[in-house]
Image (cartoon, rainbow, N blue to C red; front, side, top):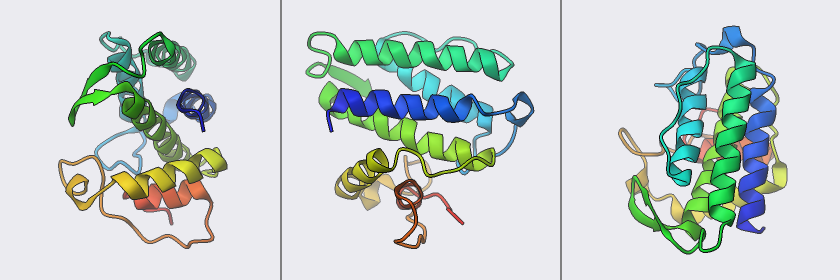
Length: 180
């Protein structure tokens, strides 16, 4: 799939889950044990702003306003990647200087798996963007090594997941989430 399309679809999937969150769920825990729903949303928004080259804004207290802040950050990240040279230039990431062609995929997978986290935390369906999740799972199998798993690292140990489960669940389990 075209990386810009994948990024846009993943951000849209996150937005579709976020719009269904109730403001009283913002402090609920998520599958990312150290993050509440608010923290998770803040993480996605901050990642988008890092791509676009700006600081993350103060987060509003209600979901409708958070939806708008996320939408603006997603548009800014998408525009940055889509700009001339946006996929060729290097971006500073937690793993060092990384080409845009890699970062766009990282951001798409991040938004998609965090859409899953958000859905799980708020009691929504987790079968999100099945073909995109399947592609993200295939790529994750190639790039997520044991060196990237564990405390203080981006991913937890892979958890058990029935192979017949939806691709989003299998992706979440591969990246360390408990799906049951």
